[in-house]
Amino acid sequence: MWIDYVLPPVAAVLLWWLGTGIVILLDRVPAACDGRKTVTFVAASSFSIAALLCIGHTAGDKSLAATYGAFTCAVVVWGWHELAFLSGWLTGPRRVAATPGARGSQRFLQAVQVILWHELALLANLVALWAWLDGSANPTAAWTFTLLYAMRVSAKLNLFLGVRNLALDFLPPRLKYLGSYFRHRSFNGLLPLSLLGGAVVTGWLIVGAQSTTGGAQAAHLLLASLLILALVEHLMMVLPLEPSALWRWALRRPAEARP
Image 1: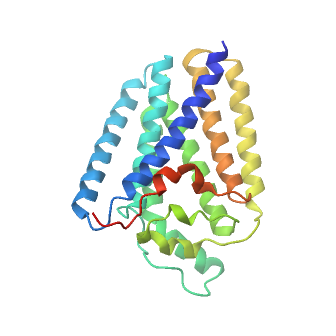
Image 2: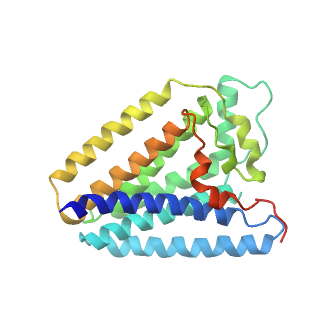
């Protein structure tokens, strides 16, 4: 039925757009309100734990509802990592701008140091999900987290190598130093490879959806839709567009406003 092919993309787009906006809003709790920021992070952590429990509950269920539930919960867990990073709770051992004039391996090593704890936490979460869900009837959450991780690594590498739109609007004041590790240029050699690889996997997922039904088909289409959105984000890096326009409603609130 046509709804089987329309609902997954709609669900993925809404979750991607709304989820990103919620993370931005939570991150923009005024810096002066340390207590409120802590409460916000604790609440977000509680939601993430609940999402992990939900993933465990859906692991043995192949139904359509379980597939959507696992997909949503994986995005919630991913959102917690993003909030932990943007809030400054989980970044890296280096918390200063790049050394002026740093190039090559020195610049790359410094860039790794500013996000090291965040990257290790993501990798640990990824490994744990696969160890938990490998061989289960519904590994949708593990595949969702894997796709998000792969495309985020690709995006970070492209920002490091250089793109047209650096999306600095998304960085809170406490992390403005990260902009010194980005490079502004019209193009880099990795971007077409990222787009090509993403397009190939997207095609494979769509073809796979043709030979499946129910929850398995929905999982293929949800992942394909999420990957298409990631490819759009990659294109926004080099096209004459303003990526932040999609979340103007969330970015409107000043990050350092006083209560």
